[in-house]
Image 1: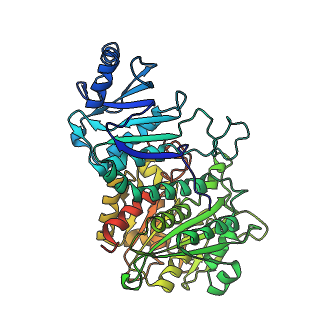
Image 2: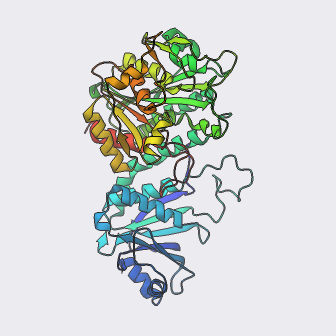
Image 3: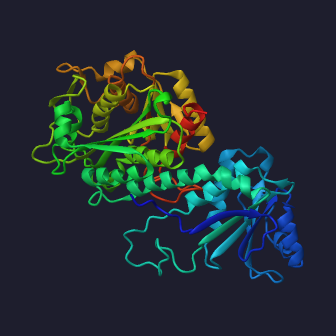
Length: 510
């Protein structure tokens, strides 16, 4: 599997006194109060930063900048002064976003190298915060230009010759910063891999092609098994197969195992992802407007693959199994019809009232398979499941549903730490009645109201009693995502950093 790159060929850490050329980035707190490196450059350039501050509205507020071109007295072709605001109150997400903000300012048109002198007005930045800054810069650098035929002369991934290639972060303890960033390099690869998968067009990335790409995870030590359509029929996955039977492309399930904790690590955590590589809605055809976005209806599966890559690359001491259901929902002559009744792997019968409520049917069999096969200590599934969750939460939070308060609280905390935020929504017996069917055990839609809740209630029918479970509805956060400090891509890779943090904080062996 080709891992996506930022436009950087080198990111490193160096002492604050190391020499540099190209672009210099220095900082100021509110006031403005210049950092020591900014004061030094101001002195060497005979007060050019002071003059620039005086003739602009720059006050050192968070995220604001002053850009000085061709400063005399130094080797740098450009100096960027960035406001920190009040860094004493910064958390992980603040340093992460600052890295993205700075990366966005480095257009690369003035030089191939940039030197960031990361410090506050009062001194050094902690190594963990330097690492978060570097992570943000790497995430912001992602681009997907694979299908652009007219691009500048390339340096390997679509960037022109004048694009920034080398980023050096100068800090108080470069060795400690490098050690802190080592696992974050794996996170970058995992997020970018998930973004690549989501951004691919559906004519290139069907179920078989997606499954084939997962095979290269074996290079990192992940065990990968691809279950064919014949194997799915033998297992009785009638719910998943019903979704894909209108497509000429066969459905697949991919099972990925990372055994980083070994036999003593106990039962794995199971992460399950919806992988509908294109969703027309089937016979219940979607409106034409915006249907092109449905190439991203496999973002849950993409997150699972990206997470497995990150865990394996950083050698996480944890046992995790990833299960993704890959299918295409098309209105072919053999497509499932509204009113059909199908039987899931669990034996549950499902009345299909709307073939566009297909993701839950894919997940139903994958959830059951993961529990039957691996007896996991907890199960988390991700899916671009409902438009209803965007009505409720917009694109700022993913919906969280869970049968376990502890798991829910852990996920919410991980979301706050990483900035991939969740909001818990209710489950309950009265909502469960919404999916009762007159002709089968359940129906696949609960009607107009509370659509994200009734979808979650459907999934809960396939969670075994006593198994801690959480469902993340990422329809608003994983594709067609809002531009942020750390992402300007259509696909965000949402969930990789969130779940990696959850696993790191609560499930890895110490």
